[in-house]
Image 1 (cartoon, rainbow, N blue to C red):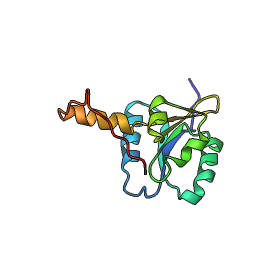
Image 2: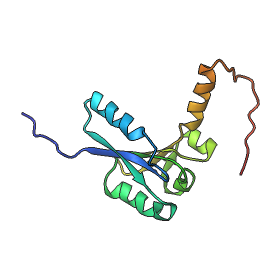
Image 3: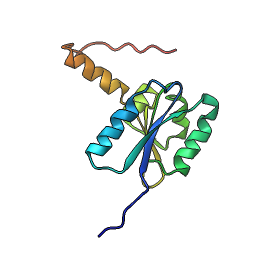
Length: 134
């Protein structure tokens, strides 16, 4: 009989505000349904504490985090590699902690937006994209 592993893999979200973010409930249900020993923690992280949170991410051997405002751009300097979407958008909303200790940044916001348009019957092929800089 295999020995019981009481250490759950950790994932979560860093942001402020996060009190109204239901992602943890959804992720925990998914982990449970898949039989995974994972936990999703919702962490209020203020901008002035973000560096410490990123150090904690590594120190606690977390598997990854989602990011919400105001951290999606500031996180770029912590990434070892970025997906093409994150490079194009210039922001990261998902950090994957790879087994070798590197941090990979992904951005799913654009993909989700495009899928939403297509599922609502909006054809975006051949349309001009205008990017606004703030």
